[in-house]
Structures are given as C-alpha cells and as structure tokens.
Length: 355
Image (cartoon, rainbow, N blue to C red; front, top):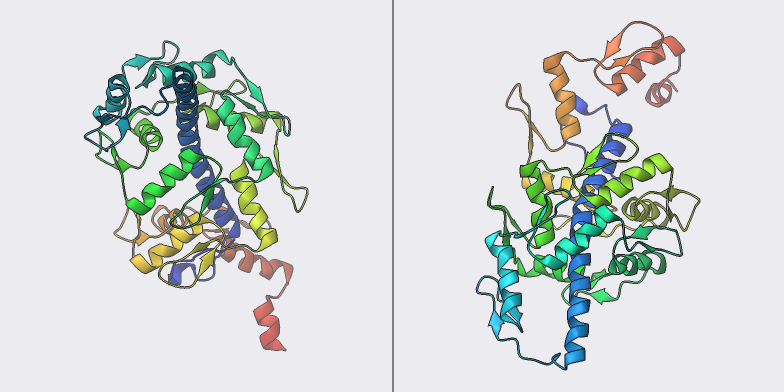
C-alpha cells in the first residue's frame, strides 16, 4: 500500500503502518456501502426493465415511439404513467411506503422488491460460493465476479463494467450530469441510488438489525456483509494465494499486490496508485485541500489519522505504554525508539553510522 504522507516536521519519524491499514479498510468499507445502495437500487430497476421489455415484446409494442419526455433530465417514455412515476424522483415524492420499516419508494415495483428484504422470499443462490441474493439480477451480476466478465465498456475511456446500469452511472462522470439533488443540503448526485444513500445521513435511519448482535445498518447489503463476521463466511478467494475475503472490493485490492497493477494515475503528476482512496488522498497535495481541522487550534490536515495524532498534543493523551517501564508516549514510533534503551537493539541508521 502506498501511503501519501503529509509534509509535517511533527510526524517525519512516525509512519504507523497499522493506522494506514485501518484507514484503508475504513475507506473500502465506506466505498462498498455506497456501492451497495446503488446496486440494490439498480437491481430493482433492472428487474423492472426486464419485465417491462417482456411485456412490450408480448404486446408488439417494443418499437413504440417515446412521446413523453421529462423536462428535468430529458429522459423519454412510451407511456404518460411512466413519466409521472419518473417525475417523483425529481420532485422528491415517495408515495409507496413499506409497512415493515416505514421506508418510502417512488415506484410500487421498487417497494415490491424491497419487501423481499423483510420476507426473505425468492432467495437466489450462487452455485459457485453459496452466496444468496434477493433478486435474479443480483445473482447474475454476482456471477460475473467468478467469470471476471465485464461486457459493458465505456466508449470514452474504455473502462469496463459488469452491468449496464453501472456503465450508465459511470458515463455521467464524463458528461458531468448530476440530476439528483438532496432537498436537505442541495448536494447533487449522478444517480437516484447515490442520492438515496446520502439522504440516510440526514435521517439517521438504520432499519436493518443484525440477528447475532445489536448493531444496526442503513443498507441491507452492509448488514449481510457484517453477519459474515459472525458466521465466518469468506466467499471471495484470491486467485494467487489462499487468502479469503468477505467482500470482492478488498479481494480486488489485495490481488493488485500480486499483479503489481496500479490503475489509478494522478492527473497532476506521473504517480500511480493501487487504490482510488490513496489517489484521492494524494491529489490533496496538489490541490492544497486539508479537510480535517483541529478542534483546539486552526491547524488543518489531509488525513484524519494525522489530525488524531495532532490533537493528542492538546489533550495530553499518550496511548502507547512501554512494557519495560511506566513511561508513556503519544506516537508508536517514539515508543519503539525508547524500547531500544531497554533491549539494547541498535537501529539500522546507528549501526551503519558506527560501522
């Protein structure tokens, strides 16, 4: 893992790799949670579209003209009723309510798909790893993890995706189309799924409770992933070693260690990175962005880990205790340097200089 370290005299001797690893895992967890909401929304959409297409083929209406166009985003529909349902997304209307958890939906079909979460009906199981899905489309998308199939390619940058819906969302990055706006903070998003995921930040809604402990989650996929911690299930195996993972995202990140692949290149310099989160952090060096501000003074940092270490100066916290004496330290690196006084082990730099 490449770690972009902030230029600060305070931390030049303190790499703290365990903190870096923790931040990577948190970044991956958040990223996966965001994707989970999008995938859940997309699965409902894809199944609705499949049913719609079948109905059109049966009735011979698959070539009917789309006369009803949305004035907000330009999307066209064959039927006025479909346009009316679509407009609910822009207006923020959610007339369909789940009687189990109170969640609101713009379409009856989305509510119907959501109800499977509570009833656990129509479970579709992967014959490769045993993972179960509420939607057929979810199983189909998942199977591409095993086959490595990504049939949908972006004609602008060549990036490939396992589902057409994810490709459509990706293409909005190139066109800068962000048609979904949060009514609370006016933040805009490229898809209804991302908007829906974002809105739970304002509502604080966590309707999904773990059956093994009291922890609650905003998304059903996050709950399912969490429950694997209790069951010990790790369906994703590295194709280069025996290491297994709960999620596909950390598996992909892990496999780049074997392949040496660095897909993410900085637009400002020639540096490349294995993980998008690392690239994002690195970019802040060029932009000067420092989003983490000390609550005790005006000092700002690129990373939260650096902020936490800095704030210990104000709080006086010293979490690292020497196992040989009662002395405590703020930084792990300082503790390790101190321990050499007890063990008599010389650092590489000291031995080299003495030689």
